[in-house]
Length: 73
Ligand SMILES: [Zn+2]
Image (cartoon, rainbow, N blue to C red; front, top):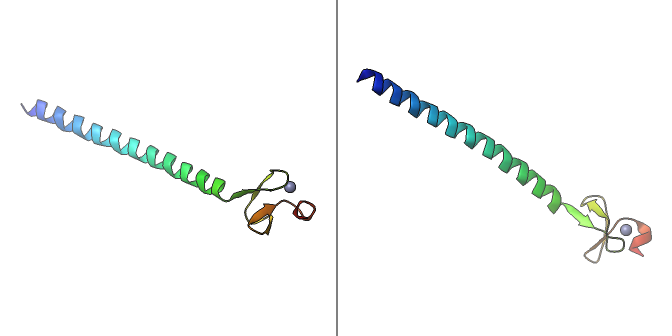
């Protein structure tokens, strides 16, 4: 009986360990996806040529973004 109990405990510990590993890796994937979504959210598109630019770089005028002074006018 003691051996069976030991086996059950080992099985439970192993299962918990596997679940923990899965949780860790899914957490990592979720964090990566969040980072990617944040990157996409911060990308804007030039209203003239459609070029994608980081939000802090382009020129903004009247709620629209432009990649350069030439496209702004
Ligand atoms: Zn442009």
